[in-house]
Length: 355
Image (tube, rainbow, N blue to C red; front, top):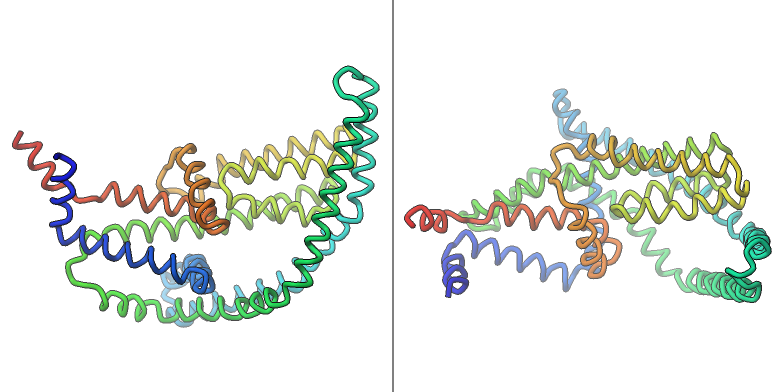
């Protein structure tokens, strides 16, 4: 009865009703048209990131149209640099990694055989041969699948090139006509939306801080790890540092997962040596500084979510929407947190006070 009365009370509140209808519309939009609106969602993310560079210019009295143009030109210049230099170099290192993989496997097998000779009762030689054979078979299968995918993904490449043009273009107009677009959307909504507006203001500010902070974190971690790997002459420095940077988009799991390839490449390059140990220690220090210095600095004021809640959110939203769900797990949890925090409780508090 208590739950029924509370539901009835909330549904009679026009603020809550409007909020639920808007939320239902957004969910249905994602469900039915989500796959077609990927460029729009990507443009929104990019707009949030670039807005963080436009606002400081506006505070310096630079006209918004000029600020948008300057920031957009810098972004396009960096994007061209990324496409013409960084990505081809990363692809080249990936090709070198594939070429070196057989020798790495042979070296790893030799190390395991020496381990067997030292501890024959723990692992048998036949077991090692079986594991290596299975591993090589899996790699060959992955290579065939990659080749098949490459040959059959011409349309995917065409779509990528289309998105490469569409996403920056849509983002540019989102930024340039921001006030007009927001006013147009507001004009479509009813007047009595104070609760929805409150949720939007809080979530908008926090999502903007999250996206801008994450992109800066990605770039800083990528650059720092590349400098470190380059200084110690670790193979595939650019490729590994790129994935280390991208790994910050996956909370907790990404940093732990990238430890394996970094340590394995160091081990196959130098064996069990001081350099391998230095690589592990340096990578650990880098992750420690990222988690305890960089993230608090970039995400200051962002809602504090318990690590367990974040990991559960990553599992749930990642299972529902894949990579996008993993990336937006924290903003979605923030949305839920904000809704719970701002949910109308006036009538309940009055009843408790009367009691």
